Amino acid sequence: MKLLVVLVVVLIASIAFSQSGRKVREIKTPVPPPAQTITEEKPKVLMPPEPREVTAEKNQDYRCSEDGSLDRILDAEDIGEFVIASKEADTRASITGKPKPSYTKEARRNGIQGFVTLKVLLSGRGKVARIRVLKGLPGGLTENAIRAACKIEFKPATKNGQSVAEWVTAEYVFRLADSSIFTP
Image (cartoon, rainbow, N blue to C red):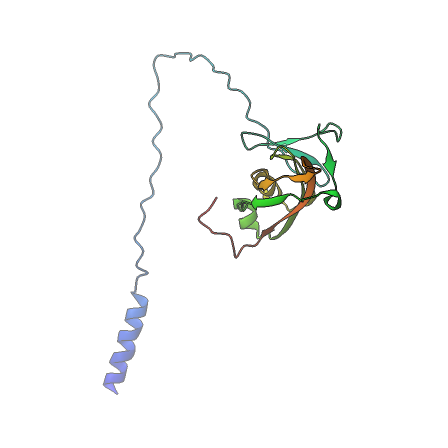
C-alpha cells in the first residue's frame, strides 16, 4: 500500500514539474537610434514606378513580354498573319514543351485548387502570339498559368507548305497535393 502511494506521488510530481523542452526566449526591446545633431538633407531620388501587376480576366487577350509581365491586348484581332482552324491545317501545331506553372503563396495559403483553361494562339513564327483566358482561378494562379503558357515550345502548323498560326487549348491543373511548401 505504501508502495502504491509513493508511485502516485512520484507520478503526480513528475507531471506537475515536467517541462516542454522549449527554451525560454528573451524579449528584446528595440533601442532607439541616437539623435543626430547635424541635420543633412539627402537628395531625393525619384524611382520609376514599379510595373502594376495585371490581373487576368476571363475573355481577355494577353501578350507575352520579355520581362515576364503580362500585357493586356486592347487592339483588334489583326495579328499580321494568317490564322487557320485546326481542321484546315495540313499538319497541326505540335507542342514539344509545356512548362508547369508554380503555385502562389496566397493560393496555397487559401487552399485554392482547380483548372485554368487558356486558348493559346501559336504563331507561324514559332512564338506564342496571344493568350485568352477561358476559365481562371483566383490567387494569382491564372497569371502564373499565362506566364507558363508564354514559354510553350512548339512546331507551327502548316498549310500548303507555309507556316500558319493556329489556336490551341491549354489546360493547367492546380492541386495542393502536387505543390510543394518549399517552392514560391
